Length: 570
DNA sequence: GCCGTTTTCGGCCCGACTGTTTTCAGTCG
Image (cartoon, rainbow, N blue to C red):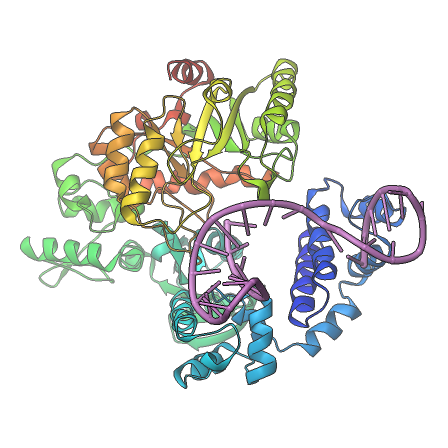
């Protein structure tokens, strides 16, 4: 059992204890221990040794024993016992906004509710209103929350989908019966959330390949099996479908299965206008099939430039492909540096030096550190004194490290009235300032728009962080007039963040083209809170591609000298 | 369950918001 799995168990114990009505501080001790574990860079064996000799703050005798048991056996009797005493459905109920452990426990003990389905039923029967602390409004909110959860159920973040698809592709690619292989569907188009995985293979032996697919690691069961197609359910509940076609049909199947449905409908119309018929099996002129070696050849047959999968959303890409005005998309290799990285100074899990070394390893030329500001006390935001201390540390680090330049920034809270979280003299001391909203999400649209626009007019602000505040599959964006915000950013020459954390992907790609028209510039920021978070930059590149951005619009494609000059001009 | 000590118990992070109350508990970030 690795560290991540152990921290997950500890967190779940904390939740279960709360549901049981245990002392909340006891429950928090488990959550604290999970965090302490996360923050420690050590590998597991040396960690266990340090815990046993009481060297880890937040992990005492009892927790050290439990963690040792987990690390050694992969199980914990105490955890199993707790799980058995609390209905599993209560953990689902905790996902409903407004329902925490206390209220969930009340629902359980007073009304006998043990699952989301029972909760929905009870709401419809108007049974919540009699409970202490509940009323008609909260019952209505609970119902809305359940609706939202249902809507999201069965969807996954882009990152999760990529992680599950990669090993499937790897195994199938090695199979001798595979001639060509590709991911398709919304994952190939890099949509921000994905329902299921679609794979296409070219092979002369479909049965053999489908057999192999059904028995890949991580496949829990086969849901459907036909001659050329199989659907399986993976062990996390995700659905994956493999289509096997003859090699000549591969480009057509790939195109059709990649979609979007709207995009392929446009292509079929276009074919028809040329006396051709485009299907998932081929391109026909009357009865005569026209051979196409790859997707590009199909587009060519329709007098179109090749349209990258990310753009196939019926957002004007066919018109642009006809006019030869598709954007010149860039890939990860064009990104030269990174902004928006947290460290242990606030809520990050790694120190600045470790982050810098990892960034250098990944080939980046500069790293912009930006911890939280003082209002973000839940994230150990920096007061003015700690800002000074960190400044000294980062200056020394920058002087010491070869091959990577450190920029010293801050992620300053945008206060409800649109001011930033420090006085001007402190703001002026940073190389760059990211302004972000972390509280007071529920302002009216007018107030929130004014708040962001005022922040954008602040001369010390460099860029606007996660502009809409959304958390994919969890929290809707706050209400804000993003067109007005983009206008303000363009007017004041501020950079708009493309937050590359796969839970955010914010700015939304749908707004990128409007921002481009207004002349806005962008920065692809991983918002990394641990070492592996730096690699999230890839998801930001996916958003940029989907938003038709070219390298020239993205400041992190500049080299260190150029970006330093741009920051200095601020 | 952890920690620290004025050392074996008492406190454990803060503030805003919401919907319920009629002075506050629970949730959230």
